[in-house]
Length: 341
Image 1 (spheres, rainbow, N blue to C red):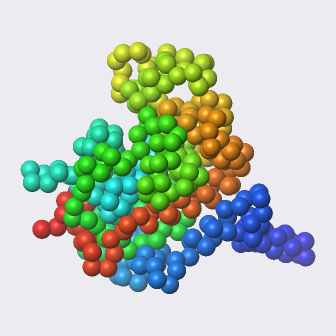
Image 2: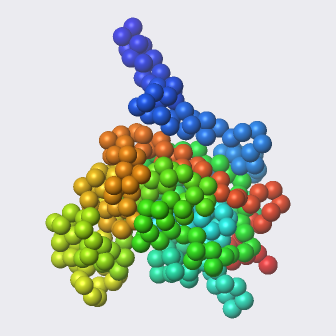
Image 3: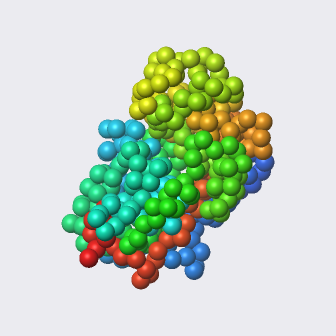
């Protein structure tokens, strides 16, 4: 019994005090992770928001629906994570990306980075319908997106984090900002750093968020120049994409390749290991490890999966706090695809 007790205590100390352990050079970001999970007293977003505002089963309802859907279709997990990212980088995390065009309203869904590319709208609308039956006019579409992104990552084996809640939904969208503010897969490193800096992220946080590409797929049309014309790519990897995707020199633009060919349906650090071996699928992926200022961070994540998990969770918390509408701002949409009238 004494040995068992000591083992249990050791385990508890290891898990519960990971922030203290990680203050060392091994995991320098974990203390930040712990502090970021605890909203400050002035924060308008808090994980307990729906427990205090009339929908105590909201988080569990969303988790169950998203987990079920992602386990059935793993690619959906990447789509929901990307949907949250594309929402937050355009006028903040306000569900503006979910608003469909109408004869009198121009949304963001047909902007260049989103058109024929974003997926997952239907599952978000389905979850919203469940919540409207459970607790009408309480849970925002913006919060559903934030929780769906987290739950997708967890369903595919990635890190968990507390999502701060209490966002409200916008009544506007910004087509032009969607075209200008979402980073292109053709950007070089300096362009990537600038695009994320515009939203308040460091280069290191940009590298962490890019780890989202450990899941998901990209179209042949986005990688053709890389696999035929770039030199910083493993030649056998390029040839396999050319022949077996297939991604020919012309045609086949919509054929899909996994962003992480090693473990395409598992959220891990294989993305970074691929970059070390010149197997980044997108031009922008390989730019993170191409003799530039972020090489060291890619190497760190490739060799330390726990460090990546912690920094990714930190960066996701920060992204989820981009310019939310709170209090009396915006509205709680009844249908995520259109504003209330």
